[in-house]
Length: 448
Image (cartoon, rainbow, N blue to C red; front, side, top):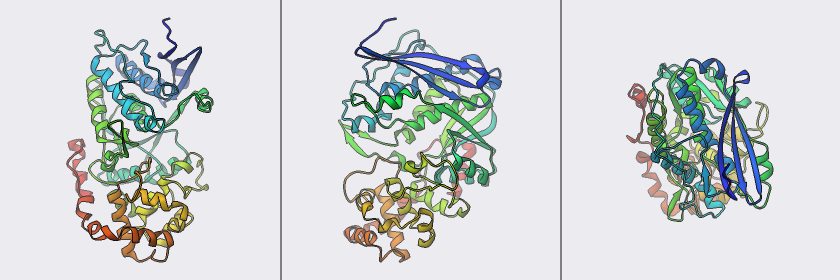
């Protein structure tokens, strides 16, 4: 085995059919140290569904999962030398993975002040000649289920249109099960087991840690489930607002939500069609609309208001319906509270969050960032400053927060642009033509 002092090796994977589990193997070489990692995916129906699809399709998807899941281990030291082991990539495939690693880790590079230019270079060779494989699928969809408002809106739109779909999630918690029951659709739960060494190594001062393109992980994992189950569509709930970046670093836009952008969606669609199969289509049903419109649609579905959460801080430890859904101090909590304050009564909103976030002086700077008054847009899945300003404008019209200290302060700071905010409604609530929604689903756009 050829070894380098600074290198990352994709070793391959082992399928354990008795447990429906795939174990992905990696080796990271750093100086005199060498680390071996195993990450596992447990996919319901893996063993029974494998025989129903062509073997080249099955192994082809697992090859891509091997390359993607390795990102969590590669970023510990970001070695220049990358060896893809048993996988031979074409030049175009190499370009795809260079993009996914570079743009998908944009926030990680920015926060760790890493010069990412020409850092990620996946090898390619003339022997890489993989082509797409035909597969029989049914007119059914897998709908990605999060714990928040977006996937709920997607599910309700599909139900209204009488579309057949099944919910899918990676590492479902109690919240997912509760919401799935309320939606009234079955939930497939893919379990992901990260190598425990990663958590220990992240504590070391000489390793890097940070954000990974998790939505890309979901897309590839769901692709495997779609193939095994004969689903024709994988439906995400990524909105137009996700295309809006956070900051410029080394000449390029850094976007916390890059793997939720339309750019990634199109890249993924093209890659799957050319190298995996043309019979499974991934798209976002909410791509044509912004966060503010999604919040408006969600506000009408009161049956979910006490069930959902978008708080990543609390979500990591929320496993039962009785535990708090909102930490009340993170940018995501502030964002959702701000947008919902435009559409639902104050008393109900305060009850849902366990407090009035417009009275929390510690959130003043976060609200300023969300409103574009200072700093940059927080590194969270939040909407644009224009959307936040319009929501704030509507909340002011409700005349429920006039005595709240932070709300009053922010109103004064927005005074000079108040009239301009009032004129943004049409642009914020318009339905964009920039999407890749299949023709069979486009009538749903009329309900937006």
